[in-house]
Length: 295
Length: 295
View (spheres, each protein chain N blue to C red):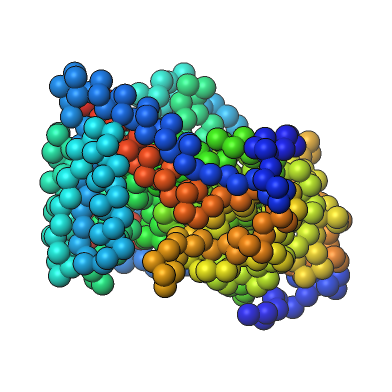
């Protein structure tokens, strides 16, 4: 499979792989499903558990709540405050898991220092784990069984598919190995028959390993990590980084100015993976709500 | 880290990375733990569920039972016959999971056509999942949480450690992406800070991707898959393949004659990964038996 990226290239030759239109399409579908569910007596409900007083976390939670409301999903924020212990967080996740009126559960980061997502996420019922953080979700994903993928990882794949980027038999590199992005993206690319290289901070010569990649996914959180020397001319680059700038803006991990004109396609930040992630979180929630209740 | 392999090289320059000595050491440790457990009133017990009439499966199960007996572990073979449905297999796994006298459970392959390991393995209690096939085990492994790794994957890592092959920051390639070897080995290498490339049947130019590897793990099941063109002079090659030959012997996936003298180290087949795998299966069983019972 060597079908090229079908998006019409920008004047620079580098296609801008926007997520805006895709996110809008997904949100439209979600809104229709949510309306049907509500008409049938089930109000789709997403619960977000927060245990921090971080400003960017609060901003993200507000944006999810707003997007949920706009698509007819009730979003409930369970704010435990920043001084709570892991047992209290676990108890909140268990209560929500047992609550038949709740269809999706998200555990927001950062967490208090003695709490970890990996440890707490097992308390999220797998069928409500719309951000795919429960180790069972990650394992089912790796084993090729149905499971919610972390929304960001799912968004990377959705964006590649939306822009018709072929994956089977192609060389892909993933920079970053987090449990919420790097690792699940690598699993999903592998499932789609890409040959996958996972790079991280211990990688000796990053450019040497990313340069052969036809599909490059970057999820580290470091401004300017990927520059011209890291990319091949035929590469499609997905920038998952969202780094705040001093002027209140947002930039990715890829030096967009340096690679534009040198690669086949690049997702913008903002307006790339981000909006698709939120839309998929909502899609996962209505999917969970639409499922017949377990008996 | 560029510490070389410490094994004294064979006359060919290629060190033979045997698993025999390591397996013996592990079995010795297992036997001591099993004796202590038995003296304290707990006979360590491994149950192997079989649902096939495959000859090489029967051979493997016998070899496990023999090794178990030699180390003081009781091995119980639950042979359901080849014509059993998935529900019967699942029920057997659940019964064993609930049986406090059983500490380790293995589901032997091949399975009947309508049964799959991925689907059935969830019925194995994670704390008894000594061959790491439950998706939760795979997910916990990927998330960096304590879990039993599939014994073969654990054996690859144990063998690399035994022969003091450095991993952090090194380029590793894994050929094969099965849930029991390729994927978990990739996760374990990643956890040890190697840069990991996973190749498989859709990989376009295998040699191009394996040649930069300083550590190459091959787990496909195809005789002669890896030849001289696939390896670098500094590579350590772990051959997980066990392919029967017409004369009743066993060969790996690596053309040993072709790569010997061209790589730094190579595991033999037989006598490499195989004996370590069996020893680790027994080690996992006594570990499970030594754990305080869940309340």
